[in-house]
Length: 363
Ligand code: TLP
Image (cartoon, rainbow, N blue to C red; front, top):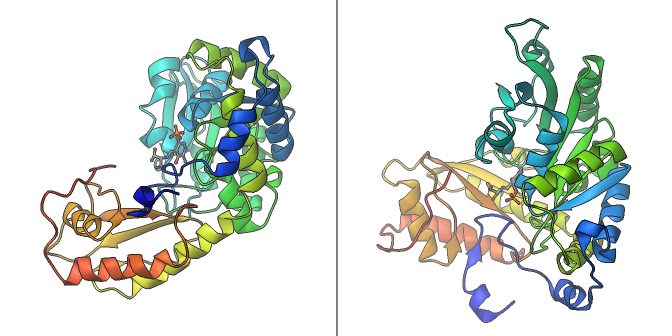
């Protein structure tokens, strides 16, 4: 990492990660072809690898997590169909309602519980009776890890229970697995085990795994055939995409195990923040790389806190509410954690934010 990059500790997200030297070397050396003809050997290799890691028949490389979720929803549902998902789901909150906007898919939310799960009785109650007034329920979506609930890892038994419920009622289960790798590491299970009862999963290469671009959707061969068509209609079929897939191959082979470091750093940060007056957090709720906390200091807004941290070399987003997020990633070391805690302590208790520091108001 360059000196310039090191000047700040960037905790806005794990999406801010830059490719490793091994990724850049793999990108330079990548064999490529026209992927719309199915002729990019590096894309084909990545897709086969991820399908196997997910225990699914097939997979398709897509541009982003948003695209992966969108084409999955479009492939499972038709216009006027309904999907059941959490009110804290990224698909519901942060993807412009793409399923509705582009596919006419009606979202039916069930509240996410603090641990990221959906209550099974509430999901059952949300499944529509067959009646001319009702949309037809087709799909349940889960998110693992559950980002906005605090990076919570949904356990195997729960994933299976939702899959069983979906299948008993003739529905499909899609998993937004943007951070499924984090869940697998935190729970010490293979990613395939977590999605054994799912019909599709979208996993991201460009979050904790550090690849510059891309996600992969996995499912049955028949489902992936449909998803490939839907990728094309949203303009997501790329040509010599092997230069990107090459970094993805390094991501899934070299960058998964080290996520445990991010989780340990997140936990250490949470424990440090719990000691600071003006911050509320339960360190036991931090299971992966995402740390949500509440600013309880009455005389400071999140924007002011973020500005004060920025002037001390720590970058965070500030939301409208008092709930704020810090995300660990592979550029943040264990040694950075005490420095971040100290920056919080100073920012909160030595007053005076640096006026004019640029802070993104977000969420
Ligand atoms: N999450 C981003 C922001 O959009 C909030 C972040 O910084 O966490 N599913 C989940 C669970 C996600 O957290 C995200 C991105 C996506 C899907 C979308 O992925 P991209 O950004 O690749 O479209």
